Image 1 (cartoon, rainbow, N blue to C red):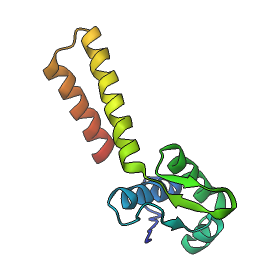
Image 2 (cartoon, rainbow, N blue to C red):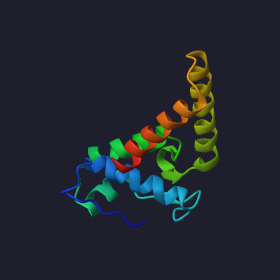
Image 3 (cartoon, rainbow, N blue to C red):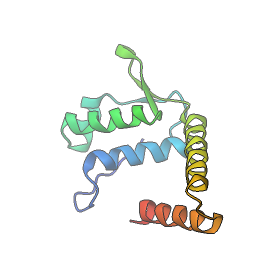
Image 4 (cartoon, one colour):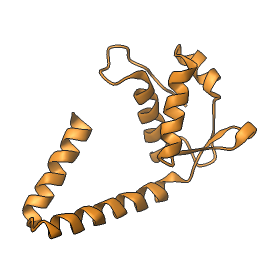
Length: 122
């Protein structure tokens, strides 16, 4: 696992850790079942505070990307399918909401594209 923290990045260090681990897990660079370093070990190797890495791990666990197995460690979870199911559920909820609001398909799709662009390019 290779992570790079950029001090000049506008994203806080914990978010950089979270995003990089999440991306590597989704891309298969970190396979399901891969054991992640301990919070302290990763913090030390990156020159970060342990609380910063712990915050990233908590967010990743909340997202279903990793799972903590007590004293056995922290592992990459089978998150791809769970994340995809959650995305589909969110999309369905959005569609139901915009239909109730009487928003047309083109406007609803444009709103999604704008939100995605802002989130991924912003």
